[in-house]
Image (cartoon, rainbow, N blue to C red; front, side):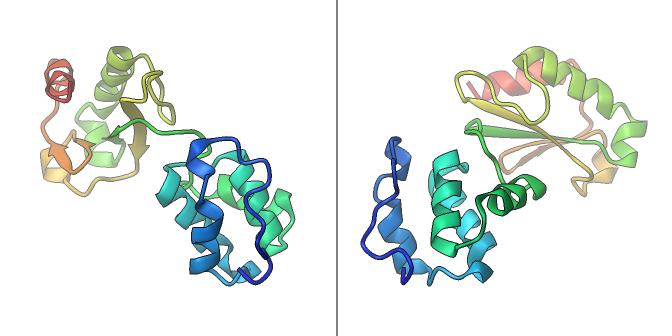
Length: 165
């Protein structure tokens, strides 16, 4: 990167950040207009946005660190904490809501011991809610990875989670 010179990530203490600086310099010029693509790149590479990576992106783009952090926290696509391997998305759309989506969400929360936006301590699962999955005819629905589970009931939740073990 032009503005980065040959410096590595300052204070990079996690294995995820090692070598990332060179990859960033190879892919990006370091302009402020690349802030979101840089955030997306780092998250794709590491799986989330560690605080040190946000400070480094601020340094490389010469965007104030508060603005970088503000951007990362504004957009739902960015994570500041590691996410679970299996991301469970429970639909909260109208059709799912009417057909018991809230009960499905409560059951997933109960089974995993986490709330939306959290991951299990072993990082096996992450739980999210979405406005609409787009499978209204199958409501209520839940998605794990690329698999959609329709016509969900609270009794189906434990069996589906066991399939992922």
